[in-house]
Length: 261
Image 1 (cartoon, rainbow, N blue to C red):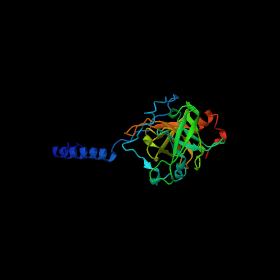
Image 2 (image 1 turned 45 degrees about the horizontal axis):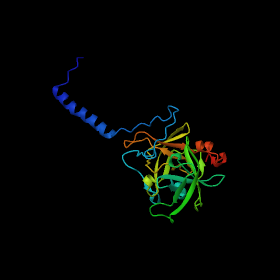
Image 3 (image 1 turned 120 degrees about the vertical axis):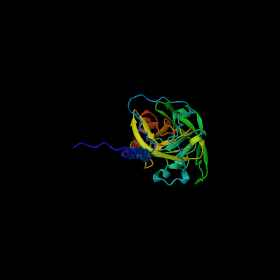
Image 4 (image 1 turned 90 degrees about the horizontal axis):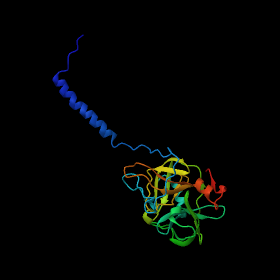
């Protein structure tokens, strides 16, 4: 049977309908979601950049920091770890961790120098749940590969040190002092780990966040934040060194100080 050609009126009708369908599809899809970056495709260790930019990385169009005493998110156990987070010399963040040889502040190696005396400020936060407490600490270990340092406080604060872990959770949180401001928390998604590096996405950091502990849902320290490499369009990832790499390199820390928990 011979098919009749479409009439001009039918062609006129189908044109707007097809265009409308395409436009509706584009509207429904919205902006494309950035694909996860390839972070373990090569074994190259990232270089540590200068202190002023190494941790500067807002992942996405907004800076998603929440003052620690206003936080009501899914990381309930992280609140138990926040008292151990410390502002170091007004420019970096550290965490008092549990160790067999005695509690010690863990931070990034590019924040301090070996033998330095640093100013440690605990409880620097909005609506503090206690008085701000200040002491000094001596840097007993410092390295750039892995990028970490250990500081022994002159006087130990009355806080519970955080435990180290080798076990990642699907989401992570960082309690930090972005730009040296009062303590805040940001959270994001665990991406991958390789070559002693830990990668995470959609987890904001800024200058001042260097050395902050990367915490699991259970409130254990999986690693420390050292470098930022994402942008305001949500591309790229931030990264740090694993606690396992730090324990392996450290003369002070012991294998018993870290566990799969």
